[in-house]
Image (cartoon, rainbow, N blue to C red; front, top):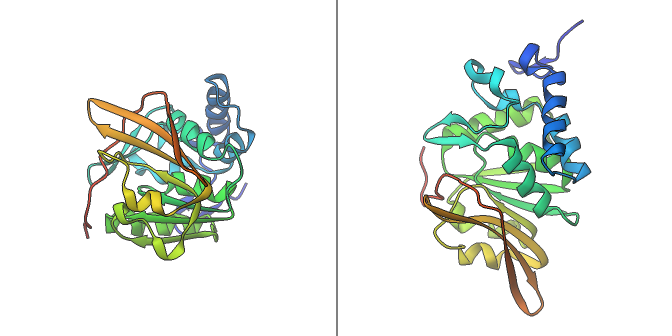
Amino acid sequence: MRRAVVKGYDLDGIGMTSARSRARLVDQLERSGIVHQGVLEAFAAVPRHIFVEEAIAHRAYQDEALPIGHGQSISRPFTVAAMTAALLETPKDSVLEVGTGSGFQTALLAQLCGQVFTVERIKPLLDQARRRFEALKTHNVSSKLGDGYNGWAEQGPFSGILVTAAPRAVPQMLLEQLDIGGRMVVPVGGDGDQRLKVIDRTEQGYGEREAPGVRFVPLVKGLRT
């Protein structure tokens, strides 16, 4: 059988990176409490193994965070699934992702949202993520090199904002880019005390609640090229 190798990426995988391994991860997520059918289908569709280095690709479908270089990591699948499900409790047309990283979360959102705008401060990570989007023929993603604290005001307001790194406090500029009726999911705090906040914007202002504890790399200001 001819394998789907695009731009140097083996989209099908083999052995521990095969569709069977992907299906086992989806089953594990479902048993762990992820009930959002769209999120489960997106995990089944997006090959996580192409978003990590080839040397550790065999671990891609284990429920663990993995390093992606530059002091960053790809979050464990359950965390990604839980955050995505929380964001997309209702459908979102236009979503801002703060922190492209490997691009895996972006690719999941692209399966589920009309348009995804993603901002990354580390140029080599963004360049690599763009190559992966191209290999996957992901056409509803716009990306830019930028400071995540600033968001992407020119493309807002957004019906959803997902922040994949933890600021000490919710950036005011991101709150202002959230549309009325929109939702933001963001981990907040330092290494010892991070809380996952779900923030909804209404005509009256902002309401928030906390989801179970998480652990993320910090959201850092400035660019790294």
